[in-house]
Length: 123
Image (cartoon, rainbow, N blue to C red; front, side, top):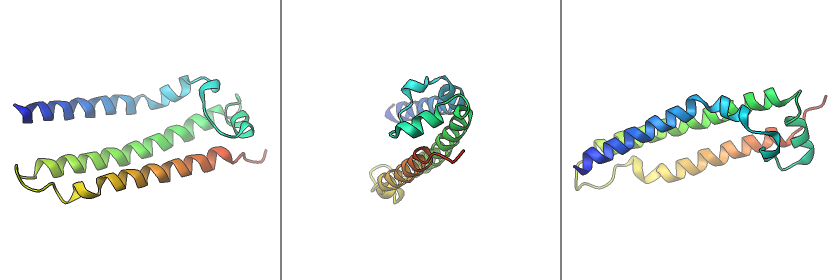
């Protein structure tokens, strides 16, 4: 019974993730400029202006899509690793490195996001 519940929760999580992932562009476009958090006032004024907001939406959506794809692949690999690990056996070899991989991917993504949002292109 526990295995069935675990699989059902896993499938529901994947479906919710795919649903949010499918509508991320529309969700980013709905966020008002006042709720966009960019640390630099100059960069915030630039990226949230009417002239540059479509480019901001495109770049931010692409970044979320990239991060989402990497994390989805990672979670799929972990799920497969867990599915093929025998009951009572040690956790799979992949499971030991999952946390550090997630931290590294998220850190690189945040650094990239900050670099392009804080830099205001010359007009």
